Length: 386
Image (cartoon, rainbow, N blue to C red):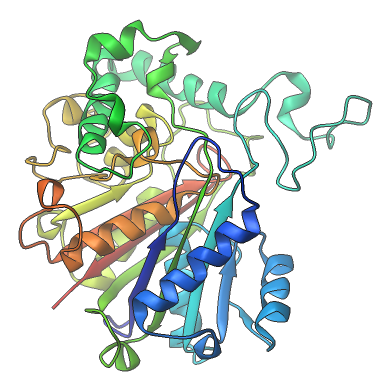
């Protein structure tokens, strides 16, 4: 079991998050990288490791831009997963200061999806590789719709229960002046159920945003963190795991997910239980995602996620305040948005968010992300301040 408090997050930054931003992805990433370093009181010369949007290729570009070799400290550029990768590299002595950076101004999700390179899917064969599910009409939303329908069949989960997730996180977004949807006001369960059906049983308001924006955060050794600009947010535990390949092979019931591995492992490393957690950042690409993750992470039993969220456990005044920036459903989903949850939880633990959405005396936070498939890659981390 990995020791705790060997690494800390020392700087975070968000650019503008908007439906469309008339800037390149690279310029957004540069703003985020520089902002996170400044937040930490560091400079580019202090960096020796990077986890970037495009993996190895983008890491190489940043190395050239910064004028020195960098350790490619991870492939994911997802929130808690990237934290786990950065900490592993730091604890192994491979690097000392790692920046995680993602930014997007072109990628979209849905049937009009654009590739990471920015080029539209070709209109002539061969359009896709032979195992790509899009060739028979699938894209991201139907996968999650199938998971929702199966959960309803197995456990009696209702659309009203799913809607509670969207309603809760929209309310949180109204308290966050930087969120995309907060300015549109709160929504009701009826609003969710009356929004157009995207893929039955998921309505429009059951689905995350698709927008532009960037984020970055900096991870370094605990020793170095003590002498920097901001209060260190220590990484007490972090884990990642994968299961199926991207949107190709799935189990009939869509459970269990790798969250059953990463959540308990991160908490065991940290020496904490669910009851010790003050604030959560949970991946919320769809309302059903949150219901399932709360089950697999152990906050409730399998099949109880619908009633669990409907009971108000995730609200600002609930037992586990979650996604207090509005989450991916109402704040921002900028392509690879897992790091958005890390930024929010760090700011909560440092007491830096608006008073109306600040969790009082928050000391321990938990983040979980997933991606590259419904069950694919998952990561969890436990963060804390002294």
